[in-house]
Length: 489
Image (cartoon, rainbow, N blue to C red; front, side, top):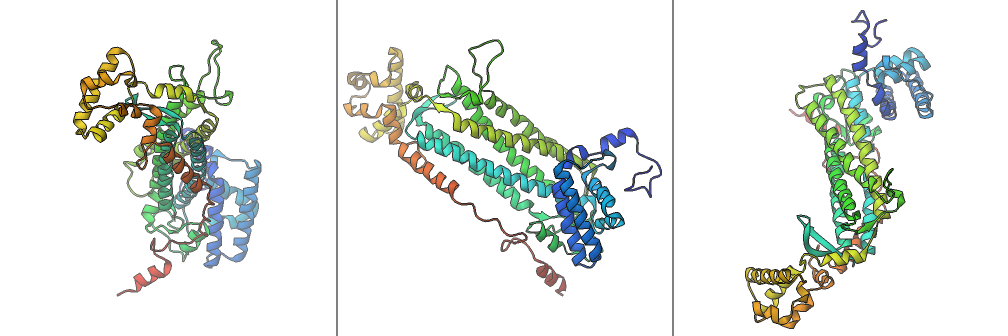
């Protein structure tokens, strides 16, 4: 038996290995809801344009809805011989309604069909990830507010640098996640154009209304170039790029949790809910959830790199290489979603050891910068001179194996005679963080204000989504705009 999709041209069946490498139903079946939704919009448009009779449209719509129910219930049988989700749906539609099913493919190709399906999938994936990221931001901001005054060491080069607050540290990730959400939002805005009706690559001679299908599917407008419509996968790349940067942020936080849980740090504790034990060492409590978040970042990066390599050498328009856009993207989005959920759980679960954090906050002469700043303010020393004086005092304290605050006033005056007893007022870690009141600084008052600001933003009711087909002003041409353009002399 020849393949029913192109049997008129081919007289024999494909080789078994050809069928194996060509079939995508094993992974693109997850596009079924999007494929059916696109087909319903396409059928309605064909009917409205007078291309299909009403009775065919009614039968197609009835059949597609029945297929959607079968797929949701698990009763649908997917066939690898039919290659992909598009032909599986079309064949089942033919089984249900007969020859009218063949009319559904009028004025479209699998090229614009899959491009539309993937845009619908990417849009839904971005919306789901955005909701998860908002939840993670909320968890971090709530924890930051609760521990706005908790002093901990701040590091550069993983060496003690200056005291900060735990709340301030957590809010740094809230800011990172805000940028992640912004990148996803940008990607969503750009992808929200409808390829349906571009057909194989050149458009169609049928009098279709692409603005109608775009509006029915919630897109802002149809894509403007049929070649680009079917060959573009920028929207998948952008989604994966935004996801990769997000995975970097999640992995960095996961790494900090791993470090903080070691006895050498001892900054936080996680409950049994997010740790595991050892099969041989009964004392172990391993931060496996954090380690897996750290590890899964690699597969997200890999999906982006793989698709970049696939796309880099493809001429216009569609090539079967582009079938490789799906498995990696599906896997990466799933992995990212899992990582966000795990980090959110850990953020809510972890408890800081405030005493350990405070004890180590003063290690490594972390208030040295406060001393240098005091010398500038109180003695009017140029900062470089103050830096030099402070360095000598740190060296003296290190030689005696004591903290800066343990040096006597006489010791300090031996280095800089104008130093007064007031200097000891800046050498405590709590005084240090309270003094960092500049905008964006670690002062507890700042942290509380920022945490409350974020929580107010995050808890505010999300704006209603635009109605399907609503177009932002100035964002693109309407059909009337295009009609005016072609009528110009």
